[in-house]
Image (cartoon, rainbow, N blue to C red; front, side, top):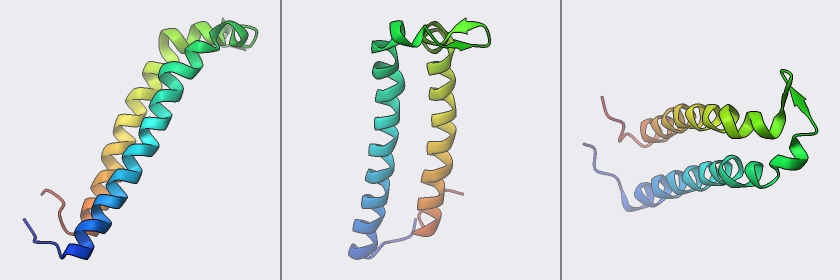
Length: 87
């Protein structure tokens, strides 16, 4: 593993922290906000399903899986930029 300078270590942690906070905001939105507004969202149709029902049943889960792959790709890009990526 490559030793980072203190400045690079701080910059790597800042980039990782900002990525994590961004993904936690998206997770909170799909995990809580969408479900809190499920009843009003049911007035909108998505593939002939009420949108609130669809988001509770499948949409949020799809968003979480996509978010996992995006997070992995973005974190790997950050690690590569600072020379701490795993082989």
